[in-house]
Image 1 (cartoon, chains in turn orange, yellow):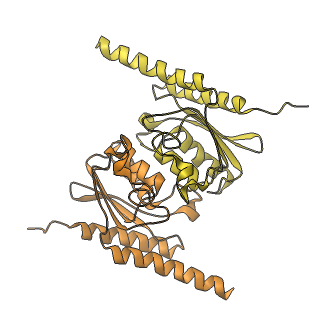
Image 2 (image 1 turned 180 degrees about the vertical axis):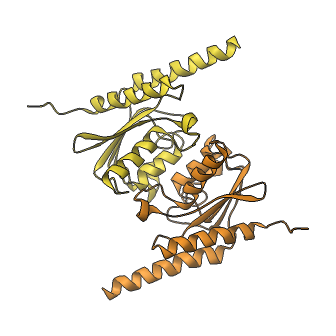
Length: 159
Length: 159
């Protein structure tokens, strides 16, 4: 019998997406969307390549999942993202009615799920995601970001 | 000499976009983006047609403007939208660094600019929009929404 996947397994797939972003010199954040145990969308941050402020990993994953299901309503889906979503993405998660949001590491500066804004405490908007779990593979999700920015700073100093 | 356009003039163009949405049986919200006095993007709500939770008027307008300017950074642009932006759109406005946000009527239920969330009070996220003005053609912007939902309710009762 096939072993059921854990939240960590799905977050590892999101981390692979983050790694793709890193290789493109994009801030390394990745996301996957899961329905009935199957990954139906995966995406990574593409802000610089696309020149779109909205090209965040979880945002692109939501767009892909809606396209695949031909529905804006993703209430049967869970979302895994390596970094706590920003205000835009938290709003998109709420509007698309994602069931369970799992994130890796917190974003104290721009996070709008638990850091700058506590989404579950906002009436109406906070109805979705229904469930919210942070800290999945927290260290790996934080490390890929920290090392990216460490390298950036080192390069800037060299110049 | 050509008379300079006022905020009301641009909001009237956003209202025309809202009217296009109404004719498609979409919730009637419209938006335009202005740079150096010229309208560079216009859009209306297309959630049902596109089956994307993110297909809000101002959100689509931001994507169009970034495509046109080939830049995610819209710090030279102003945005006019008939309804107070939701959390997703307020986040997108912040990320794309819109200079001045003008909205028509408030959204007490889902608005995340002044209603449910007061964006200018959030450190870091609230840096943009730099300026925020509500209540431009407030009555017209509210009326198109009220009459849309009044008709919807009447139709539901008939069924």
